[in-house]
Length: 368
Ligand code: OSB
Ligand code: MG
View 1 (cartoon, rainbow, N blue to C red):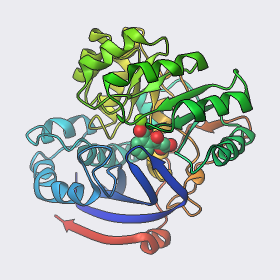
View 2: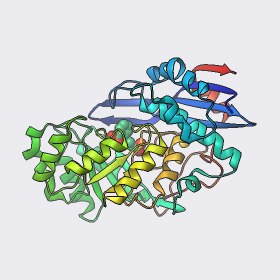
View 3: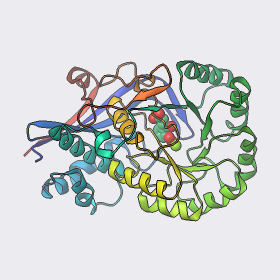
Protein backbone atom coordinates (compact mmCIF):
# COMPACT_ATOMS: atom_id res chain seq x y z
CA UNK A 1 0.00 0.00 0.00
CA UNK A 2 2.80 2.44 0.89
CA UNK A 3 4.29 3.91 -2.30
CA UNK A 4 6.22 6.88 -0.95
CA UNK A 5 7.13 8.50 2.34
CA UNK A 6 8.15 12.07 3.09
CA UNK A 7 9.45 13.27 6.44
CA UNK A 8 9.63 17.02 6.95
CA UNK A 9 10.87 19.13 9.78
CA UNK A 10 8.89 22.34 10.13
CA UNK A 11 9.42 25.38 12.34
CA UNK A 12 6.37 27.44 13.25
CA UNK A 13 6.77 30.72 15.18
CA UNK A 14 4.68 30.82 18.37
CA UNK A 15 2.47 33.88 18.99
CA UNK A 16 3.91 34.14 22.49
CA UNK A 17 6.68 32.28 24.32
CA UNK A 18 5.41 29.11 26.06
CA UNK A 19 7.13 28.44 29.38
CA UNK A 20 6.88 25.32 31.52
CA UNK A 21 9.04 23.96 34.33
CA UNK A 22 11.10 22.37 31.51
CA UNK A 23 12.03 25.67 29.86
CA UNK A 24 10.71 28.22 27.40
CA UNK A 25 10.03 27.95 23.66
CA UNK A 26 9.41 30.69 21.12
CA UNK A 27 8.94 28.47 18.09
CA UNK A 28 7.61 24.97 17.58
CA UNK A 29 9.78 22.56 15.66
CA UNK A 30 7.74 19.58 14.57
CA UNK A 31 8.06 16.65 12.23
CA UNK A 32 5.40 15.80 9.67
CA UNK A 33 5.09 12.47 7.90
CA UNK A 34 3.33 12.07 4.57
CA UNK A 35 2.61 8.58 3.29
CA UNK A 36 1.18 8.16 -0.19
CA UNK A 37 -0.41 5.06 -1.71
CA UNK A 38 -3.44 3.84 -3.60
CA UNK A 39 -4.08 7.28 -5.04
CA UNK A 40 -4.35 9.05 -1.68
CA UNK A 41 -2.06 10.56 0.96
CA UNK A 42 -2.04 10.34 4.73
CA UNK A 43 -0.44 12.73 7.22
CA UNK A 44 0.98 12.30 10.68
CA UNK A 45 2.37 14.87 13.11
CA UNK A 46 5.18 13.87 15.45
CA UNK A 47 4.89 15.75 18.74
CA UNK A 48 8.53 15.40 19.80
CA UNK A 49 9.98 18.82 20.59
CA UNK A 50 13.30 20.27 19.44
CA UNK A 51 14.94 19.43 22.76
CA UNK A 52 14.38 16.30 24.84
CA UNK A 53 13.01 18.15 27.89
CA UNK A 54 9.43 16.84 28.17
CA UNK A 55 10.54 13.28 27.41
CA UNK A 56 13.65 11.65 25.98
CA UNK A 57 12.48 12.13 22.38
CA UNK A 58 13.44 15.12 20.25
CA UNK A 59 12.56 16.06 16.69
CA UNK A 60 15.92 15.35 15.03
CA UNK A 61 16.16 12.02 16.83
CA UNK A 62 12.61 11.17 15.75
CA UNK A 63 13.52 11.76 12.09
CA UNK A 64 16.57 9.56 12.47
CA UNK A 65 14.76 6.72 14.23
CA UNK A 66 12.00 6.79 11.61
CA UNK A 67 14.46 6.67 8.73
CA UNK A 68 16.90 4.19 10.20
CA UNK A 69 14.72 1.77 12.14
CA UNK A 70 10.97 2.33 11.92
CA UNK A 71 10.33 2.81 8.21
CA UNK A 72 12.36 -0.26 7.16
CA UNK A 73 10.19 -2.35 9.50
CA UNK A 74 6.98 -0.67 8.38
CA UNK A 75 7.79 -1.23 4.70
CA UNK A 76 8.92 -4.83 5.24
CA UNK A 77 5.67 -5.63 7.05
CA UNK A 78 3.60 -4.50 4.02
CA UNK A 79 0.98 -3.01 6.35
CA UNK A 80 -2.43 -2.22 4.91
CA UNK A 81 -4.16 -1.15 8.15
CA UNK A 82 -3.29 1.13 11.08
CA UNK A 83 -3.77 -1.82 13.45
CA UNK A 84 -0.72 -3.50 11.92
CA UNK A 85 1.63 -0.54 12.50
CA UNK A 86 2.41 -0.90 16.23
CA UNK A 87 3.04 -4.69 15.96
CA UNK A 88 5.38 -4.03 13.00
CA UNK A 89 7.38 -1.52 15.07
CA UNK A 90 7.41 -3.47 18.34
CA UNK A 91 11.03 -4.56 17.91
CA UNK A 92 12.20 -0.99 18.43
CA UNK A 93 12.22 -0.03 22.11
CA UNK A 94 10.81 3.37 23.06
CA UNK A 95 10.36 6.27 20.62
CA UNK A 96 6.57 6.39 21.07
CA UNK A 97 6.21 9.80 19.43
CA UNK A 98 8.01 8.69 16.26
CA UNK A 99 5.90 5.52 16.15
CA UNK A 100 2.68 7.45 16.75
CA UNK A 101 3.36 9.78 13.82
CA UNK A 102 3.80 6.85 11.43
CA UNK A 103 0.68 5.14 12.73
CA UNK A 104 -1.33 8.34 12.32
CA UNK A 105 -0.13 8.80 8.73
CA UNK A 106 -1.18 5.23 7.87
CA UNK A 107 -4.50 5.68 9.68
CA UNK A 108 -5.18 8.97 7.87
CA UNK A 109 -4.38 7.32 4.53
CA UNK A 110 -6.59 4.27 5.19
CA UNK A 111 -9.51 6.41 6.36
CA UNK A 112 -9.24 8.76 3.38
CA UNK A 113 -9.37 5.79 1.04
CA UNK A 114 -12.47 4.60 2.91
CA UNK A 115 -14.07 8.05 3.20
CA UNK A 116 -14.36 7.74 6.98
CA UNK A 117 -13.46 10.40 9.56
CA UNK A 118 -11.12 9.74 12.47
CA UNK A 119 -13.97 10.45 14.90
CA UNK A 120 -16.19 7.83 13.22
CA UNK A 121 -13.32 5.35 13.28
CA UNK A 122 -12.77 5.88 17.03
CA UNK A 123 -16.50 5.59 17.74
CA UNK A 124 -16.69 9.16 18.96
CA UNK A 125 -20.07 10.23 20.28
CA UNK A 126 -19.89 14.02 20.17
CA UNK A 127 -19.81 16.61 17.41
CA UNK A 128 -18.27 19.36 19.55
CA UNK A 129 -16.29 19.33 22.76
CA UNK A 130 -15.56 21.92 25.46
CA UNK A 131 -11.99 23.23 25.21
CA UNK A 132 -9.50 23.90 27.98
CA UNK A 133 -6.38 25.99 27.61
CA UNK A 134 -2.89 25.54 29.05
CA UNK A 135 -1.31 28.76 30.30
CA UNK A 136 2.47 28.91 30.49
CA UNK A 137 4.51 30.37 33.34
CA UNK A 138 4.38 34.18 33.05
CA UNK A 139 6.91 36.87 33.98
CA UNK A 140 4.61 38.23 36.72
CA UNK A 141 1.29 37.59 38.45
CA UNK A 142 -0.12 40.71 36.75
CA UNK A 143 0.84 39.31 33.34
CA UNK A 144 -0.75 35.97 34.27
CA UNK A 145 -4.05 37.61 35.23
CA UNK A 146 -4.02 39.41 31.89
CA UNK A 147 -3.42 36.24 29.88
CA UNK A 148 -5.99 34.20 31.84
CA UNK A 149 -8.52 37.04 31.50
CA UNK A 150 -8.07 36.99 27.74
CA UNK A 151 -8.75 33.24 27.56
CA UNK A 152 -11.76 33.50 29.89
CA UNK A 153 -13.18 36.26 27.67
CA UNK A 154 -12.64 34.09 24.59
CA UNK A 155 -14.84 31.46 26.25
CA UNK A 156 -12.40 28.71 27.29
CA UNK A 157 -14.14 26.24 29.59
CA UNK A 158 -11.21 25.41 31.84
CA UNK A 159 -7.84 26.94 32.61
CA UNK A 160 -4.65 25.01 33.33
CA UNK A 161 -1.74 26.86 34.91
CA UNK A 162 1.79 25.61 34.50
CA UNK A 163 3.55 25.63 37.89
CA UNK A 164 7.06 25.12 39.22
CA UNK A 165 8.79 25.72 42.56
CA UNK A 166 8.49 29.46 43.21
CA UNK A 167 5.48 29.79 40.85
CA UNK A 168 2.70 27.77 42.44
CA UNK A 169 0.62 28.85 45.47
CA UNK A 170 0.72 32.60 44.74
CA UNK A 171 -0.32 32.52 41.07
CA UNK A 172 -3.12 30.04 41.88
CA UNK A 173 -4.31 32.24 44.75
CA UNK A 174 -4.26 35.32 42.49
CA UNK A 175 -6.25 33.60 39.71
CA UNK A 176 -8.85 32.32 42.20
CA UNK A 177 -9.16 35.80 43.74
CA UNK A 178 -9.58 37.51 40.35
CA UNK A 179 -11.84 34.99 38.58
CA UNK A 180 -13.67 33.34 41.50
CA UNK A 181 -14.16 29.81 42.79
CA UNK A 182 -16.38 28.71 39.90
CA UNK A 183 -13.65 28.91 37.26
CA UNK A 184 -12.65 25.32 36.39
CA UNK A 185 -8.95 25.47 37.26
CA UNK A 186 -6.11 22.95 37.37
CA UNK A 187 -2.30 22.98 37.52
CA UNK A 188 0.52 21.10 35.74
CA UNK A 189 3.99 20.80 37.29
CA UNK A 190 5.70 18.76 34.54
CA UNK A 191 7.51 16.67 37.13
CA UNK A 192 9.11 19.63 38.93
CA UNK A 193 8.59 18.49 42.55
CA UNK A 194 9.67 15.71 44.91
CA UNK A 195 7.65 13.80 47.47
CA UNK A 196 9.44 15.94 50.09
CA UNK A 197 7.46 18.89 48.67
CA UNK A 198 4.18 17.31 49.83
CA UNK A 199 3.58 19.99 52.53
CA UNK A 200 3.91 22.72 49.88
CA UNK A 201 1.64 20.88 47.41
CA UNK A 202 -0.95 20.44 50.18
CA UNK A 203 -1.27 24.21 50.32
CA UNK A 204 -2.90 23.98 46.88
CA UNK A 205 -5.77 21.94 48.40
CA UNK A 206 -7.55 25.08 49.63
CA UNK A 207 -8.14 26.33 46.06
CA UNK A 208 -10.54 23.62 44.92
CA UNK A 209 -8.53 22.65 41.84
CA UNK A 210 -9.91 20.04 39.43
CA UNK A 211 -6.59 18.23 39.59
CA UNK A 212 -2.84 18.52 39.94
CA UNK A 213 -1.00 17.09 36.92
CA UNK A 214 2.31 15.22 37.15
CA UNK A 215 3.78 16.85 40.27
CA UNK A 216 6.59 14.27 40.66
CA UNK A 217 9.13 12.64 38.37
CA UNK A 218 8.22 10.38 35.45
CA UNK A 219 9.16 7.14 37.18
CA UNK A 220 7.81 8.16 40.62
CA UNK A 221 4.70 5.97 40.37
CA UNK A 222 5.04 4.75 43.95
CA UNK A 223 5.70 8.29 45.22
CA UNK A 224 2.64 9.61 43.36
CA UNK A 225 0.53 6.97 45.12
CA UNK A 226 1.91 8.13 48.50
CA UNK A 227 1.33 11.79 47.58
CA UNK A 228 -2.25 11.06 46.48
CA UNK A 229 -3.00 9.92 50.06
CA UNK A 230 -1.78 13.25 51.43
CA UNK A 231 -3.76 15.54 49.11
CA UNK A 232 -7.45 16.25 48.71
CA UNK A 233 -6.80 17.58 45.17
CA UNK A 234 -7.16 14.69 42.66
CA UNK A 235 -3.87 13.53 41.20
CA UNK A 236 -3.53 13.29 37.42
CA UNK A 237 -0.62 11.71 35.55
CA UNK A 238 0.86 12.81 32.24
CA UNK A 239 4.56 11.90 31.74
CA UNK A 240 4.34 8.72 33.87
CA UNK A 241 1.73 7.05 31.67
CA UNK A 242 3.53 5.72 28.61
CA UNK A 243 1.27 2.78 27.67
CA UNK A 244 -1.97 1.04 28.58
CA UNK A 245 0.18 -1.16 30.85
CA UNK A 246 1.55 1.75 32.84
CA UNK A 247 -1.95 3.27 32.97
CA UNK A 248 -3.23 0.02 34.49
CA UNK A 249 -0.36 0.01 37.00
CA UNK A 250 -0.99 3.64 37.96
CA UNK A 251 -4.71 3.00 38.45
CA UNK A 252 -4.23 -0.14 40.54
CA UNK A 253 -1.56 1.51 42.72
CA UNK A 254 -3.73 4.55 43.37
CA UNK A 255 -1.11 6.79 41.72
CA UNK A 256 -3.72 8.55 39.56
CA UNK A 257 -7.45 9.15 39.77
CA UNK A 258 -7.35 11.01 36.45
CA UNK A 259 -5.18 10.45 33.35
CA UNK A 260 -4.03 12.92 30.71
CA UNK A 261 -4.06 10.91 27.47
CA UNK A 262 -1.55 12.06 24.86
CA UNK A 263 -1.37 9.85 21.78
CA UNK A 264 2.28 10.73 21.06
CA UNK A 265 3.41 9.86 24.57
CA UNK A 266 1.82 6.39 24.45
CA UNK A 267 2.89 5.39 20.93
CA UNK A 268 -0.24 6.25 18.99
CA UNK A 269 -3.96 6.90 18.80
CA UNK A 270 -4.83 3.20 19.03
CA UNK A 271 -2.98 2.81 22.34
CA UNK A 272 -4.56 6.10 23.49
CA UNK A 273 -7.99 4.64 22.77
CA UNK A 274 -7.07 1.53 24.79
CA UNK A 275 -6.18 3.76 27.77
CA UNK A 276 -9.52 5.52 27.37
CA UNK A 277 -11.32 2.15 27.40
CA UNK A 278 -9.35 0.86 30.39
CA UNK A 279 -9.87 4.04 32.40
CA UNK A 280 -13.57 4.11 31.58
CA UNK A 281 -13.91 0.51 32.81
CA UNK A 282 -12.26 1.53 36.10
CA UNK A 283 -14.22 4.74 36.59
CA UNK A 284 -11.08 6.81 36.08
CA UNK A 285 -11.62 10.09 34.23
CA UNK A 286 -9.42 10.89 31.25
CA UNK A 287 -8.86 14.04 29.25
CA UNK A 288 -6.92 14.70 26.09
CA UNK A 289 -3.56 16.40 26.47
CA UNK A 290 -1.79 18.53 23.89
CA UNK A 291 1.76 19.16 22.65
CA UNK A 292 1.40 22.52 20.88
CA UNK A 293 0.20 20.71 17.77
CA UNK A 294 -0.47 22.41 14.47
CA UNK A 295 -4.00 22.29 13.06
CA UNK A 296 -3.20 18.79 11.80
CA UNK A 297 -2.35 17.11 15.10
CA UNK A 298 -4.90 19.19 16.97
CA UNK A 299 -7.73 17.89 14.78
CA UNK A 300 -6.67 14.30 15.45
CA UNK A 301 -6.66 14.99 19.21
CA UNK A 302 -10.12 16.54 19.03
CA UNK A 303 -11.49 13.46 17.24
CA UNK A 304 -10.10 11.26 20.03
CA UNK A 305 -11.39 13.61 22.74
CA UNK A 306 -14.92 13.20 21.35
CA UNK A 307 -15.02 9.66 22.85
CA UNK A 308 -17.43 9.38 25.80
CA UNK A 309 -14.80 8.65 28.49
CA UNK A 310 -13.12 12.04 27.95
CA UNK A 311 -15.26 13.60 30.65
CA UNK A 312 -12.98 16.53 31.52
CA UNK A 313 -12.11 19.36 29.12
CA UNK A 314 -8.71 18.71 27.54
CA UNK A 315 -5.83 20.81 26.23
CA UNK A 316 -7.74 21.06 22.97
CA UNK A 317 -7.49 24.81 22.64
CA UNK A 318 -7.65 26.28 19.15
CA UNK A 319 -4.44 25.97 17.13
CA UNK A 320 -4.72 29.69 16.33
CA UNK A 321 -3.97 30.44 19.97
CA UNK A 322 -0.40 29.21 19.35
CA UNK A 323 0.12 30.06 15.68
CA UNK A 324 -0.68 33.20 13.75
CA UNK A 325 -0.02 31.20 10.58
CA UNK A 326 -0.77 27.50 10.74
CA UNK A 327 0.11 24.86 8.14
CA UNK A 328 -3.56 23.81 7.82
CA UNK A 329 -6.78 25.78 8.16
CA UNK A 330 -6.62 26.77 11.81
CA UNK A 331 -8.69 25.05 14.48
CA UNK A 332 -10.77 27.84 15.97
CA UNK A 333 -12.80 28.26 19.16
CA UNK A 334 -16.59 28.58 18.97
CA UNK A 335 -17.95 31.52 20.96
CA UNK A 336 -19.23 29.15 23.67
CA UNK A 337 -15.77 27.68 24.29
CA UNK A 338 -16.16 24.51 22.23
CA UNK A 339 -14.17 23.16 19.30
CA UNK A 340 -15.86 21.27 16.47
CA UNK A 341 -15.04 17.62 15.86
CA UNK A 342 -13.83 17.28 12.24
CA UNK A 343 -16.15 15.35 9.93
CA UNK A 344 -14.12 15.14 6.70
CA UNK A 345 -12.32 11.85 5.89
CA UNK A 346 -9.24 10.99 7.95
CA UNK A 347 -7.88 13.80 10.10
CA UNK A 348 -10.06 16.21 8.16
CA UNK A 349 -7.39 18.64 6.94
CA UNK A 350 -4.12 18.59 5.00
CA UNK A 351 -1.19 20.99 5.14
CA UNK A 352 -1.16 23.81 2.63
CA UNK A 353 1.72 23.13 0.19
CA UNK A 354 2.83 26.80 0.01
CA UNK A 355 2.85 27.24 3.78
CA UNK A 356 4.66 23.94 4.17
CA UNK A 357 7.36 25.18 1.81
CA UNK A 358 7.65 28.39 3.83
CA UNK A 359 8.13 26.66 7.17
CA UNK A 360 10.04 23.50 6.19
CA UNK A 361 13.68 23.40 7.30
CA UNK A 362 14.48 19.83 6.27
CA UNK A 363 12.93 17.16 4.03
CA UNK A 364 13.71 13.52 3.43
CA UNK A 365 11.83 11.36 0.99
CA UNK A 366 11.65 7.78 -0.14
CA UNK A 367 10.04 6.25 -3.24
CA UNK A 368 9.38 2.56 -3.44
O1 OSB B 1 2.66 18.82 30.01
O2 OSB B 1 0.82 19.00 29.05
C1 OSB B 1 2.03 19.21 29.06
C2 OSB B 1 2.98 21.32 26.04
C3 OSB B 1 4.22 20.82 25.74
C4 OSB B 1 4.76 19.85 26.54
C5 OSB B 1 4.04 19.36 27.63
C6 OSB B 1 2.77 19.84 27.92
C7 OSB B 1 2.26 20.87 27.14
C8 OSB B 1 0.97 21.46 27.42
C9 OSB B 1 0.14 21.52 26.23
O3 OSB B 1 0.59 21.84 28.48
C10 OSB B 1 -0.69 22.54 25.88
C11 OSB B 1 -1.38 22.42 24.56
O4 OSB B 1 -0.90 21.79 23.60
O5 OSB B 1 -2.41 23.04 24.49
MG1 MG C 1 1.34 17.86 31.34
